[in-house]
Length: 125
Image 1 (tube, rainbow, N blue to C red):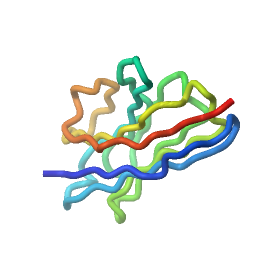
Image 2: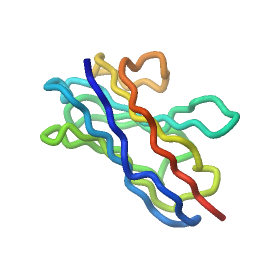
Image 3: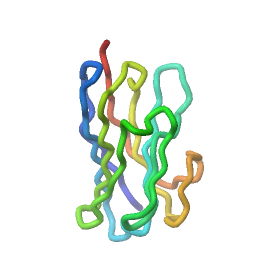
């Protein structure tokens, strides 16, 4: 069983930056594709970014492209989401997710096998 623990959320102002981290337990982290999703109050969970296993290809939602960067450090079993130029509409709970099928980038939440508990990001205007 893989456990994912996110950190790094907080309250910031529009235009600020944050870096979210997600640490995974287990020895097979490098074989997983990893993703970030977010869920705002009253809305469905939406895809944000994904990175293929090892240090591989990445994919982003149009709404964050150019502002968010997903990366991973397999030696630390950690995936990051660097967020710059944050906007109030980025306010949400951000979730880290892991997919055992590591060679496919997917935006579909159901394709991910493991989820973290989420970290709140609030951007004030």
